[in-house]
Image 1 (spheres, one colour):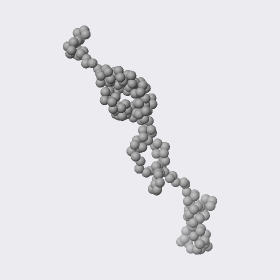
Image 2 (cartoon, rainbow, N blue to C red):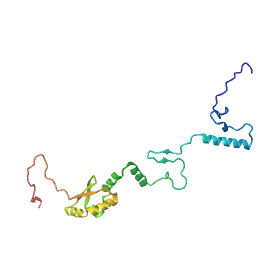
Image 3 (cartoon, one colour):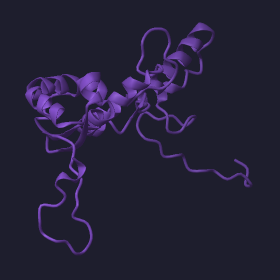
Image 4 (tube, one colour):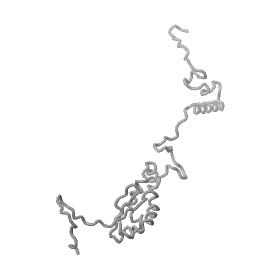
Length: 197
């Protein structure tokens, strides 16, 4: 060996490692005397060995609602990644967030005519819903009496439209009489009697 050459120490390799490709198993390198089909087979076997030795890749990320999000193209046939109708997406969101009860309560007020029917809705309106007790105001005292008689069937109708245990009890009253008690000073008494005949 000439004087100007420097000899490097041999590399420290783990068991089954080869100096040609550090960090890879020895089977990943083809034998030096292989030619033609043997060389192709050795390269293929080495590629398979590297693929199996690699850590398994995650195919999809998990979303916040616990479902696995798929990647890539969906292909033919039904797939959860396909476009969904807006109603189905909203139903799924309401179930995930626990909004069924507030949505059902809002339906009582927003779709009153659909819930109780057009004739009853024409002569009444919902005023307040608290703890399953719905207060309904009728247009006249006659309709208030009629609605009190129909309270059982109205509760069944409401339950069939918005779900059970949303409305458990009805409070029905007629139109509110005008109040004459205004101002800081009032005189006790019966108030106006036959003024409006």
